[in-house]
Image (tube, rainbow, N blue to C red; front, side, top):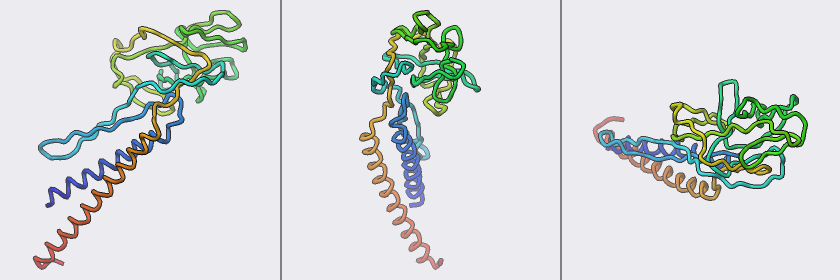
Length: 230
């Protein structure tokens, strides 16, 4: 009985962790470039405990037209490179803008990188072609730094749709094909309806575990009372 109680408590804790993952997905359903997390479980045979694994689904979200000149979306594999105080980070959120110095930055004011360094665009008419080349008043400035990874599981979420790369240098590669769309953004790959269904299923499972824990607690209390323990 005690073993069964521990297993049920373990299951309830797993559902609680699953809740936080689903809730985070739903909260970011409108965040450009956000990639949803998926939770899987493995039963450890000796202890019968559940081991939780969370991994990111890097499938592409819908690409929508915004008409904003500095919005760019990747209709191919790859990530934009962003220079931060903690080092280079990577994203598919192409919601960019110019800062006061005419440097292309993301929504947090962090620098968008070209292949030759920060993209200094000034105040001219900006055009970005399908290969990621950036022009100002028709003059080629640079090309967006776009990279891909052989092992996407080595990307770690840092918040704000940014990822840190913790893998080997040789697994950071140039995309085989680059297709950049100016005036478009890639939205989150979260399906809110699908996540709400998961949430309902999770709550039902959690409530079921709670009822089992309560019942087993009452049975244990009755058993000890039968032995004269109060």
